[in-house]
Image (cartoon, rainbow, N blue to C red; front, side, top):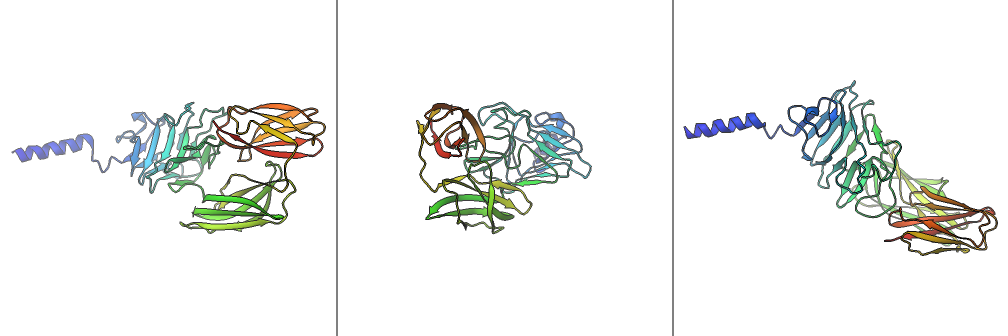
Length: 369
């Protein structure tokens, strides 16, 4: 009789609380907040860290993410469940200034088969904020982790997680639509390391190494004299698929006199691409500009030398080529100007001075706190 009672109790518990093997399937069946039970079917809200789960946003449901949700193991998140589905996930800005709490879908560093898939052209994940005002939204969106470091995949521009640096664009931007897939390997076709540009006599040797490639097509080698306007010097075919390091090289046989900027455009077979950081090579010494203090904390002073006549423009540019600040001076020769940098993250920045007489001077600022 005691055995029968134990069996009955176990059966009752299974009926009351569900079978653990089926509790990993979650379906959003109506529009609402991610955290609300009414948004989901009888299995309820997905666990904050979901391992080996299958989560589907069904039909025409629009789910607003209002939690920090982590995907681990082989978790699958499916947006849409048929050819007429218009299901969407909205990721609003949390206005937080730290990594947690936030509105984020993150891939855990232990993830092995995590996938987010949009079913058709009418499905979307939207982390867009218009107008965007930092720091709102910089910690919200979709993030992939590799050990301690994190990269923004979908969402507003943000600082890379785990290390200081300039604002980084998300791989897919603030919104992803259509029949797209993001997996735990990441959305970049190429994981790049050791990109270098070195002056060798009258030419510049570019070398780089990919630590891993998935569906990669080619590298575009881009060159600029001002870090704003870019030209493609050449194309180097990528390995395509590789789990080991692959070395590449390219030579610029005719660099500019003065400052040269180089970057790589990393392109996959689907046409998606991302840029490397920017490397700077000087083919002649820079004179006529004094930048101090450098390293800087909250400001730098820039003294314009005698090489400049007439007006001048001063620009602060990050290593992604983005113009952060521009100041215009009249009769710039001999002028010292104060440039605030307290709102920029630690790291290297490019300072460019353009004279009305055509003289261009470029230097680097190191912000360190």
